[in-house]
Image (cartoon, rainbow, N blue to C red):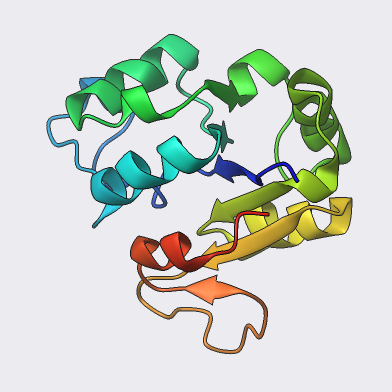
Length: 160
């Protein structure tokens, strides 16, 4: 049986989104990985394919790679799906259609991980993709679906 493929949101899932910074993340004064992101992806990327699926509007794929390089995350991803290249935003069906076609996988083979309940989680679920809410500050205490407060919990997920 094939392992699940992971789609990660970028801002506030893998890298901290600083509200006082604007423009392309790799040009920000302060760039930081989310807690445990490097350690978890070092392990996870050896077990399964990992991709980024982001709505970031200021950055093209190359800009995202430059930001990831600043925190040593770039080596863990097979590819990056971003608004600048896709022309669509999560939670649209078109956004997820492009990813499914590019990866040549069934939607049931994917897991979307993100901090945005509507765009990342409910958008993926509406499309038929399993989704996990990354909620480190428990902002969505009412959410009863799959939720983690620490990226380390991803290592406990059954891959197949």
